[in-house]
Image (cartoon, rainbow, N blue to C red; front, side, top):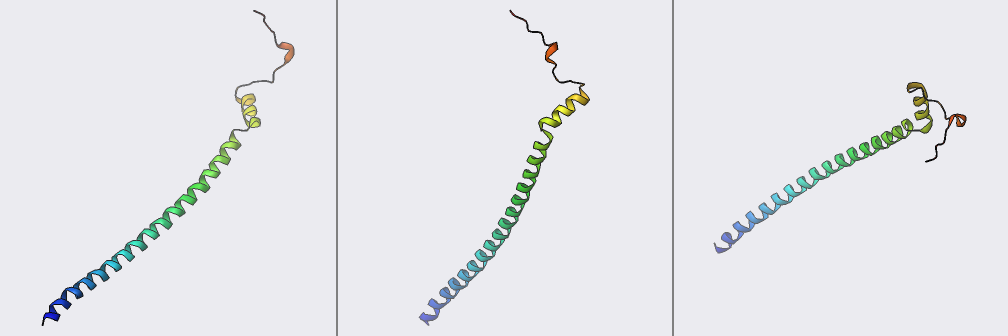
Length: 88
């Protein structure tokens, strides 16, 4: 009879431990899925960042800026014959 009273708490302890293992395994898998999704998002953002840097470097080339200066601002290349140097 005494042995039965010792077995019952042990059975509850084993069941609680089993439930703990199941919960921690489930939680671990859930976190792994979230980590995988976040890594995929990071990779996509890195690709987009690279594309934006490439686009920025394309828009900022000297040739393009010079072309816009000529067309929109009616600027011309410097003619050194028209340069006047003033001495203080």
